[in-house]
Length: 212
Image 1 (tube, rainbow, N blue to C red):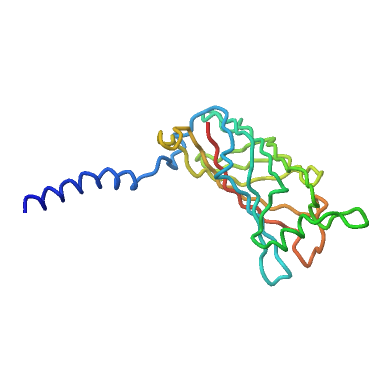
Image 2: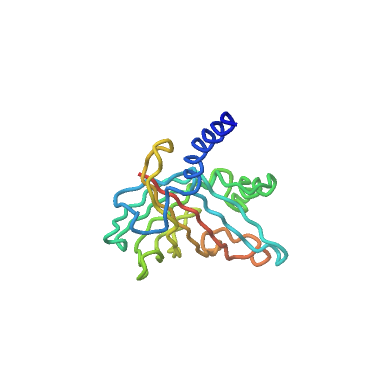
């Protein structure tokens, strides 16, 4: 019996810190956890999801990853934040090889591609203004989006998701994350093939993580 009790005690001693570690997360939705400075995009945890209406029958979507860039933020003056990110269009993914190939199909005999073409230039978003709500956890970020060689203003509706310092075993860096949404018209960027059979409007949903 003593051996059994000792074994149970040892198991509890080992399991308790593991359970405690799993019960919480290093990040919090408290904006007070945000520290100022220049953050780099965390490319492993930042994605742009785009969605269009296909024939009024079903949605079609894809992802942009491999995103790079910077966020400059001062918690005492969040309206002065600056965002500059680059999205490698050539790395887009849809999960359907034929669909992906069509989006990146080389230009035809007329010299024009159906969509992005075989070697599309990176897209880039550079903020021009940030308006933060009274609670400090939502913002409208206005900026210039350059896509397919065309630059147009775009507004992102941004929600603060969390901030905190990562544990030492995870790099120990300060991180901050957001969710954002926007709607753009692909015809504004010279990508209007098949409108209106495939919607001109493209819904963007963004998961963005930054670290320093």
